Image (cartoon, rainbow, N blue to C red):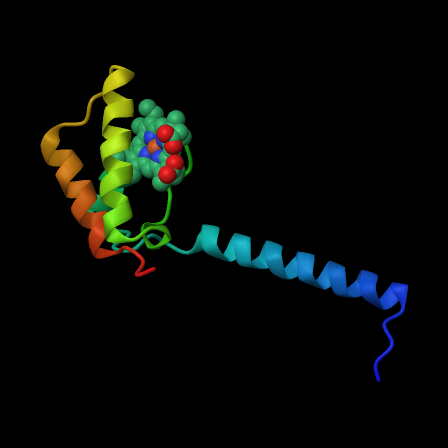
Length: 101
Ligand code: HEC
């Protein structure tokens, strides 16, 4: 039987914390899909000015439709509307790189 002392538990918790930080930093430094393409740059410019650039894998294709519609309204409300073609281009990009669950 393994007996965990308080000290071991503390070390274990610190390891978990480091792993969590490593995972987070790892995600942040992974390039976006199609990183060098014009649409990826459009996405960063249009969608990264109010908050972080969310990774396409974070949502499913269906969820992206809802999110992009909501953001479209938000941008219009703040007097910064997106051209319809830009919206469609970004939505296509997010959906073809979307997560599956
Ligand atoms: C004018 C500022 C603004 C711009 C530009 C903007 N967003 Fe947002 N976004 C917000 C705000 C405010 C929230 C949080 C409130 C909310 O969820 O409605 C948010 C939240 C989000 C979230 C969080 C998840 C969620 O369901 O709430 C995602 C994902 C997102 N935006 C994606 C996008 C995408 C994609 C674009 C580009 C099409 C974009 N945003 C452009 C203001 C903006």
